[in-house]
Length: 168
Image (cartoon, rainbow, N blue to C red; front, side, top):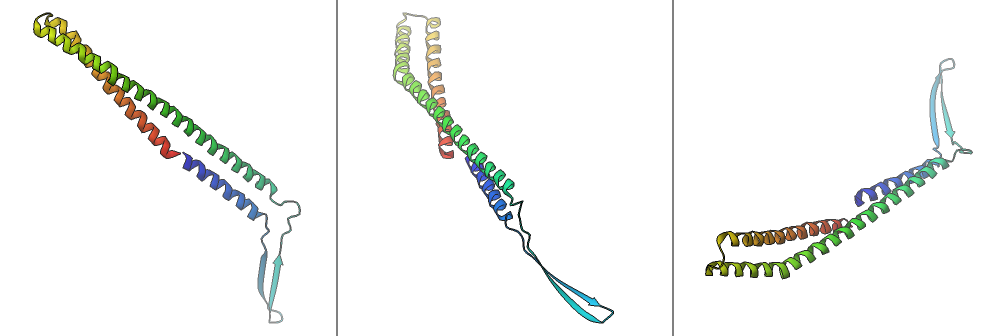
């Protein structure tokens, strides 16, 4: 997006250069030949024309081209600002995803493993039945899945940050 905006600015600058070049009048030189049949003579004529731009010095087109350059530069800055804002938003998402993942890993996963080991020990001792341990296994699997989803969120946020960082 930034490359396209910069290319647009360069194209508009080229139009300014063209408008400046069009202010300079074109000098025309004409060389004519004619044969006079009545007197059997050859004749040559040379003509030179230089238009004098008294009233039209292409100022309107030049102002228009300069205004287009200013608009293209403003669009380029707007694009860059939007990409910077998206980069900041992606960085915030990455920070949040990393914090969630760390919390799940350090606090919740360890506690879920402790609860599961305790429930399996009680089941092995015969203190609880199979229907009582199944919800504990289900909850432990849900915590593991949540952790994997948090890692996926981290990777997606990292990919966004990386793509925006390359663009800027």
